[in-house]
Amino acid sequence: MRIVILGKSGCGKCAAAKEKLERMGLAYTYVALDNPNGWRKQGAAKALADAAMAGMDISRPPVVVVDDEAYDYSAAMKILKARVK
Image 1 (cartoon, helix red, strand yellow):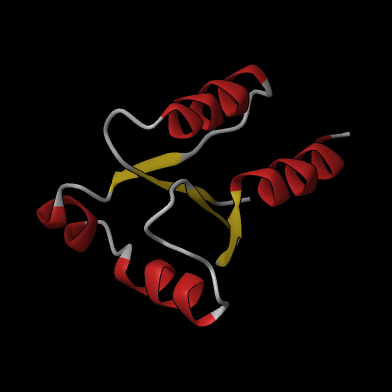
Image 2 (image 1 turned 45 degrees about the vertical axis):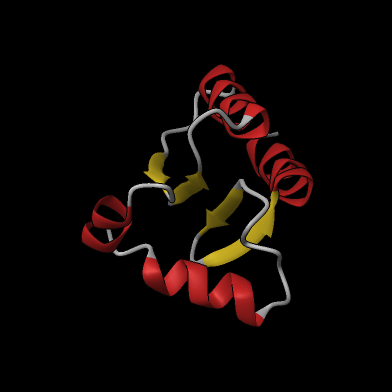
């Protein structure tokens, strides 16, 4: 399973998402959206475009990408909890 968190510095939900994934023992990649050079290099542009096309407000991180599907924080956590059980 491939997990990518698209977040911003100082975002409480972004920090919570990282912490929760670590407690669940799930590996993830974190991409800082407030560092354009970072997310461009890490290939996050497609994930952002997919999230926007799905009607997600990408200005309100985190966006959590699970196996190339973009979700908001709460939806992603529900999906991941179900997969980990």
